[in-house]
Image (cartoon, rainbow, N blue to C red; front, side, top):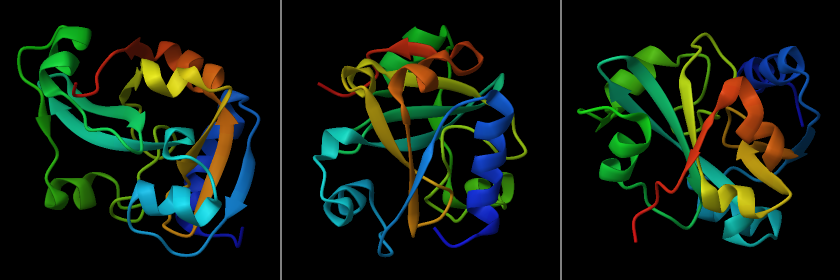
Length: 158
């Protein structure tokens, strides 16, 4: 993968956490489903990060590419009364080190809480946006779930 400041922010986070990874370049994609097609893998093998706001701060929800997040389930998992989607404007302001729509579940300037859907953990490895729309990283699902004691819960819509 060609060096990119967004990817560098993720790689630094992975290396700091001691998480083994493999970088995987691909054509520019704008959705997690398109990323799965570009990589030639099933959508369940690619995870997308949905950015949320709570009174306690930002949360990065990690779900399979083919799924949608259920905010009621996230509220229950995090024991939060108020959980909302981050707007694009707030997202751009909060995560300038990453391309809009390509914020990974870890790395960067924020030490956000992370909630990982149980479906992500059904696979040994997961592919994630690398902070840019032209590259992914492959990491162990168990490493993602164990990172800073991430919360693992069923957070996808039925």
